[in-house]
Length: 295
Image 1 (tube, rainbow, N blue to C red):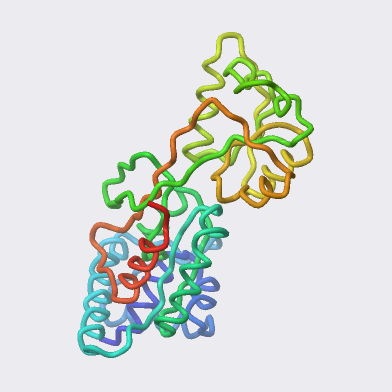
Image 2: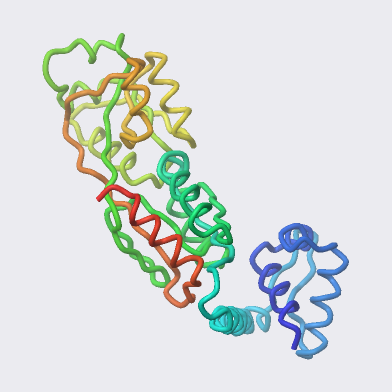
């Protein structure tokens, strides 16, 4: 059986769209259609229902998807073993929070381009839910999660670093001139800018603020670090972000760091699918990542 057919099958199953699968595979949409029809004919089974909203796996398709992924993984291992001691190469797709994508990972990618130029790293910014879904679907090889703990049946994770957090406001904000660290009751009376739901440290801060008796904090959620940081730089309130994302702003005086309440460093967890094989290219990326991240 032509493994290209299986690759097309698994890609279409993940994207749910002939157009999206064709774009990802760099094929004409008609070629994707021919691959699926050929595979269905070889297996004597209907794998997809073609609907106006896209391609939906049939019961047979869902049952065969895991086996197709196993075959492709076995082929990848065989190719890696056949490569022997040659140069490590291949694509590594990494899911990561925006804060790490813009601060920690560029250095990792730059180092790999020098030491292992055949390793192609692709970064996708996303929260925990998006990264876990990407690992499950096979779209991601590994992911970084800013989480204290994880509990996903098919995803395993390990803490590889810790990321310091900083509670910040603009120099002109009233809390910046206050003597001593602000109390929880004072913070609960402020406008607080948080990252979107699912961000562990933002969610923890929200829970703590809402637990203050009689508190009615003004909480605003954003999908990007830059949006929250920009609002706070403009003097509109307070935010809690990884220190690395505000270090430059603290250095040039656009932001100031509040003394408290204290926030524990958040773990950086390296996550992988429990069943998926880790390619030599992915192993090389992980080694460089661990070498560069703060302990």
